Length: 432
Image (cartoon, rainbow, N blue to C red; front, side, top):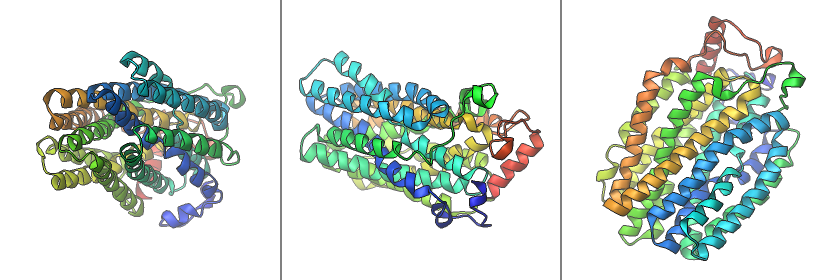
């Protein structure tokens, strides 16, 4: 609750002392680890069995698209029926899907068969990250610790993207091409079941009948739609980097360093996330998002021209440093834009947008790498972020709550308030 934290300068230590936080943080960390292993595991397995980055990118894209399309529905169901009710069957379906995908790939099944199985595999991917964020939001309410929680979750996400790709690559190249996906399935099952068992910290169920309120879709909020475009652009960075780095390291004869290079990129993201959460910002999240996104688009510019591994690692680190501030600012804006009863759905729309952008980028980068060489795939992150930045700058006004904004904390949850009161709330968040 908001009363759990009253320090004038909130920080990580205070956040982690929130009662009950560790009961969902530790299981949540284990359960979200496979998310960072899935696409790289699919890419490495399918490329190994088919010899084509284009085919690997297509299967990865099918997984990501289905994940992006079904994740918001999963979030909406979690808001309405509870996280446990959605997570338990989803984990089972996902593990079965991964097992089927591994089997078909090793049997050299045609592309259509791989894509057919990839769709339910991606659709059932456990959305643990958004669920953890929703638990923070329910626990903290309107506390000044919300931006710190957003930063902490970004750091946690990026730590998984440091460990996950390295682990998946090491397993696939050192043991067996399918070993990365086997580990992903085992962690999904164990982590998902453990996280689902933490009933006491899951957000309250928001049924329209119980609350006597009309059900609000997160997608009906204009600001959420703008953030979706921004997160799509961020997804193109993840997908484009992942496939292009795989193609590049394969081209130079050192496939084993793929995970290291991607880990450096993710480490920059994680480092920036730590700093963002430790700083007491005087600038609001909307302006931080615009600045960070501009720097991100600029940082992707030299990727396609880099041919030396050390320089590629340095550019990847710089790009990673720009991603975290954009992600954190976007997630922080959700609290002031979206009513509490649709917040898990909003978080899953953003997570799904990243997955969709990642999928589209993986497919595009794979085709470019096959036709024009590994460096051509690096054009995808540049194009994706440039287009998203254009939309973000044009529609930035939608990221400011208007007169119809909804209070999302305390007894006033679900009530409309004047625009000036919302602006005051936004300034409080900005100064936190």
